[in-house]
Length: 114
Image (cartoon, rainbow, N blue to C red; front, side, top):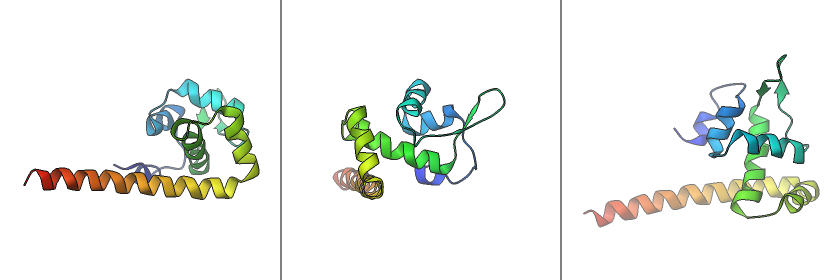
């Protein structure tokens, strides 16, 4: 199931589920939570994090800035602070292009198998 389909099924996600969505460790999500005030999951009585779809979208943008584009934490924080809307739109475009590329690679493989 694709990320976009998976994220719409529930209201809240655990840190483990979110870490799996992005193929990162939960410790990285906790670190980003300290570094980026935009990430603010709800915490239950025992401190269990519950991420909403909005939290996941913010993490997606930060993931793109840090892991895909290779920005340092300070630079990513500054980009988010200065131009949050533009950064979100750029992330959406990059995600669409990545999905399109995957489809094209798959089609090429199928064509080569003929």
